[in-house]
Amino acid sequence: MAQIQLSDTQAVILSAACARDDGLVFPITAKIKGGAVGNVCKSLLKRRLIEEIPAVDLDTVWRHDEANGPITLRATPLAYSALGIVEDSEQVPAPDGTDAGSPEPAKSRHGSKQALLVEMLRDPEGATIQQIVDATGWQPHTVRGAIAGAIKKKLGLDVTSEKVEGRGRVYKVPPA
Image 1 (tube, helix red, strand yellow):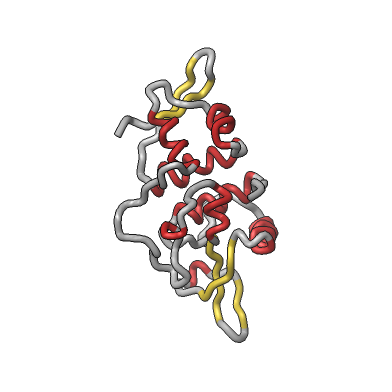
Image 2 (spheres, one colour; image 1 turned 30 degrees about the vertical axis):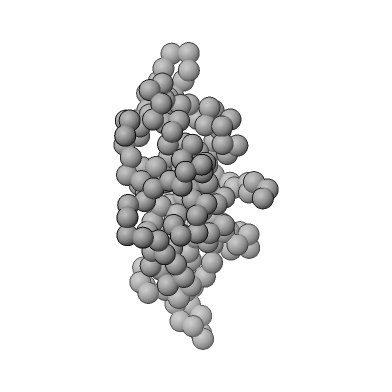
């Protein structure tokens, strides 16, 4: 599959949604002004990275439909794949908003780009954004989004960063 190019805003919104247990886009925590949220969401809908589903919580409403009532948005399996967060459909929220997988803690699928990212971060030398970009083929904003969303929030790993002379900012996770 061809790599999906995302803007910084799209990557931030998708990363936040994919980091949530239910995969919901709302509430949006990114600092986006005016009609930009609507424009970004329409673009993600058109690209099938998010989908409309009935809203259960009124704080997550995207729009109101006369026939179906309140509607919200949820990340699709394509969004998870585009971000490299998961490649296993069992880890993606089920259509009813429940977790389709087992109740075990979130983990990376062996051989996935997310697993590669965790492996690179666990290296005693750590990894720079550019090294991760080179290894995964992701854009820098996708790497930052994956670290903030999938690695820190979803997997609960403690990612640290420090400036290293000659390398720049290096990101690390304590060994397992």
